Each structure stands twice: as C-alpha cells, then as structure tokens.
Amino acid sequence: MRTLIIILALALPAASCAGGPRFLPPDDEPQTAYGAFLSARYAAQMRDIGASAAYYDAAFGREPDMALVADRAFSTSLMAGDFERADRLASDAAQEDAAGGVAELYALAANLADGRAVEADSAGYGPFGEIIAIMLGDWDLVRRGQAGAAARAASGHDLPMGASGYLLIHQALVLEAAGEFDRAEDAYRGADTSLGMRDYTTVLLGAFLERRGRRDEAEALYERQMARSGPDGDAEVAAALARVQARGRAPRLPTARQGAARAIHAPAVLLMSRAPVEFPILYLRLAQRLDPQFDRNTLAVADALQALELAAAARRAYEGVMSGPFAERAAISAAWLDFEAGRTDAALARARTLGVSTASPALRMLLANLLQASGDCEAAEALYQTLMDQAQAAGEQPDWRLAYFAGSCKLSRAGWAEAAPLMLRALELAPDQPAVLNDVGYSLIVEGGEVERGLDMVQRAAAMEPDNAAFLDSVGWGFYRAGYPEEAIDWLERAIEREPGNPVITWHLGDVYAATGRALEAGFHWRRALELDPDPALAELIRRRLSLGLEAGPVEAS
Image 1 (tube, rainbow, N blue to C red):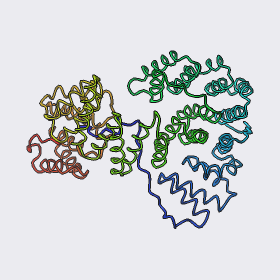
Image 2 (cartoon, rainbow, N blue to C red):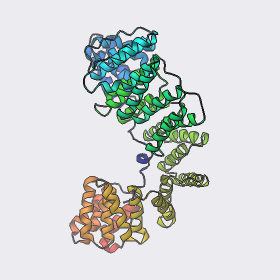
Image 3 (spheres, one colour):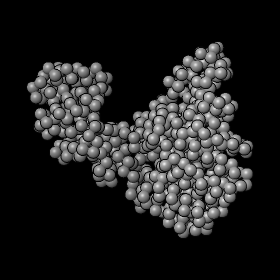
Image 4 (cartoon, helix red, strand yellow):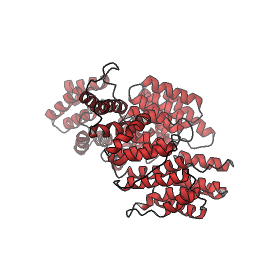
C-alpha cells in the first residue's frame, strides 16, 4: 500500500493534535470556587491550558486558602507562559510548596529578572530544584557586582553524586563573568564533552573563544559540529559559523539574568528524558521569565508543549521566536499547527507569506507540503520541481524529499507512468529510505509490471519498519500479485492487526482469502471494507468483488 501522505512525519520533528475550543462564552463565568475548579479541569481536558489557568485563578480568588487550587492556579499559569498571573500567584503558591517547589524557585527567578535580591534557601528541593536555587543565588551575586564571590561559590557547591555535572555551564559562565578565563574554558570544554547537548555547548564554548579573540578555534569548533550534524544541523551553530567566517562581532558576555537563563536551560532540557514532560516545562519557563529573548529555550518550550498536545500554547510559543536562527523552524511549526487544527486557510496564508518573502528552501518546501496536504497537488508539484531545478542550477544535490513529494503528487494525479521519473529519482537520492522503497516498490507491483523487483523493495522497507502496516500490506500484496497467495496471508493478517480500520488492507486480505478458497472469509472482509468508508472508486471495485468474486478481474485501487 502506498504511503503518499507522510509529509508531517518527514517535514517536522513532531506533530500534535488540535487545541480544543474555549468551552464557556466570556459572559458565562462560574459563580463558585467549585464551578471554576471544574471548568479549569475541563479546559485542561480540552487542551486549552490558557483557559485552564484563568479558571484555576478564578477558583483561587474565591477560595484563597485551598492549597490544591493555589498549586494548580500557579502551575497552569506558568505552563501557559502567563508570567503576569504567575508573578501574582507565586508567593501564595510558594507557601503551599506548589509544583514541587517550583513556585518558590519562580519567585526567586522573578526577583533576579526584576533586579531584586534573591534569598535562596536550598532546603526542601529535589536535586534539580536545589541546583536551580543555587544557580539563582550565584547569579544574584553577579548582578550585585560580586562576580568573584559568585565564582568561588559556583566552584564549591556540594551536590548529590551525579548532579554536579549539571552545574558545568553555570560554572563556566560565572567564571567567565569573574574574569577567570582559564577555569571558565575548562568548564565550557567539560560541558561540551559530557552533557549530551552538543549543539548548545558548542555555541557557548564557541562564543567564549570568539570573545577571547580566538576566531580560528571557534570556526573549527563550529565546523566540526556541523559536520557531525549533517545538512540538518543546528541553526544557531550554522549562524555562529557564518558570523565568524564573515568576521562579525563576537557575542557579548551574558548579563546576570541571561546567564541564569542559560544555566537553568541545561538541567531543564536534560531532565526531559528523565521525568514527565510537564515538569521540565516549568523549569524552561523559569528560564524564559529570566530572558524572553533566549530563543533556543523558547523553542524548547514550544516543542515540549507540542509533545503534550497543547497546540494553542505551543503555537503562541513558536510565534514568540520572531527573528534569529530559529525563526524559520518556529514559523514552519506554527504553520503546521494551524493546519492540524483545521485552519487550512490560515496555514496556507502563513506559508505563502513565508514562501514569498524568503528564498529559504525550507520555507518554500513548507508551502509545497501544505499545498499537497490540502489537496492542491498540481501547485505543490510545480513548486517541488522549481526547488529541485534551483538546487541543480546551484550545483547542489536536490533534497530527496522534493523528488519524492513531487512524485507522490504526480502519482496520485496521473499514475505511475508519469510519476516514475520523479519517484526513481527519489530512490536514486535516498536508496535506503523505507517510504521511498515502499512507494516505488508498490507502484512497480501494481502498475509497473515489475512484480519481483517491487516485491524486493517493499520487503526491504518492511525489514526496516516491521510494525508499519502499509509496508506489511505492500509485501502481502506483492506476494499475491507474484502468484503466492498462501505466503501473502501472513503478511496481510499482520498488517490488519496493526490497522484494522484500513479499507485497502481489508480488501486486499479479502482477495487473498478468495484466492486460497476461503470464500466465506473473503466475503466478510470485502463487506467489512465497504463499512470502513473507502473512497468511491475503491467502493465500486469492492462491490464488483462481492458480485463477481475474483472473476471480476485484476482490479486495483489508486
């Protein structure tokens, strides 16, 4: 079976479902704390974290002594990025130890951000909370002009085993602020080799080298990281490399609040792989409160919200990255969230604006992808072809996805004969991509007259992704078309176990059962396929099967 619409999986690192609608009109506010509390819970179920925060806040206003409500009001406000509300609620929430101590940490971060004294008490925090409290206290010393004292403190913290590594970025930045450059470099290099977030640590170490006038070393560092990452490397590393090659001005040493944000970002991101995503987001929001212009952190917030299917909040976060190296990726993600929420016109308008205003291939491919996903395959195909032509004119190897997506468009509109040059070009550019192997192989099986060759391709794809129902179906259908219906049964039964609601797989299994003499089961699956809302052409083919059986001839779905 072809996998024509896999654009979301290939174009973005993640996808999320649409955010739910607001469920109460503005003039229909709950009149009791309990009503507001129930509304807040329902808003959260509808994935509207902003509305949930507002209703928890209303409940807290009516019952300020309820610890649970104080906790929820603060934590949802912080999750939503409503810093004005979080500032107001933090003090009361801190008294209730809200969000595992994050409320108190937030109050400290807000004090540092606003130039007030930070009085950090590490008692009662978990390991990561303790680290963040320590960082905030040290950066308050820097803010007050006591960078030397901050450096001594940062170098001597006694943390639980395994936790001290998370202080490396913090120590490096504080030591640099204190002018202890040799020790700062040791800490930067230690972070770069040990923390598992190489793009970020490369940017920090490279900026330090640039500030020390060591541009050649910084350039070599950036080049090594870009070589490790490949063509889709980190945008900030790429921008840093371009800057140093152009002999641009070195980045400034971060201020106290900027340094604290960059220090907190590291344990927050590293915690993502160890704890439920909700909790690290709160730490990322602390960093955002300290430095709203720290785009790498804002992008991490948006990605985490998207992973939690909080689409509206994620879109707002992406839209906060308006310029700089990550602006393009944020714009692409925001456009896809519009599309997934059913706002196709808004998504296309956003993408067209981006595509017209920039020469960026990624943004123009976004427009083509959205055109294809919204059904305007002819326009998408033309844009993919233009991008391929531009790459070739520049002496570059075209992105395989351009040929594949253009071929998919042509395949759906005109069939294999017209699409073959594009699809085979995609296979040439990406010979081990399972989606390309599957789609080319399936097309050869059903339209290209090369069943054995196609069967070999789809088997390779299924070996790479053994739980992919479309690939399993392709192998089963390949065996059937090659004249081995008994071998096909196992593959198609495995496919239908994974996607029992797929009408094409269900129909295929019916044909294979019929070919092996299992007429009763064949009829059941053909009737079942009709119940699964197949497209009109496929429905007509299945009705022919029910009327004539396999004698209807070798029909095929598009």
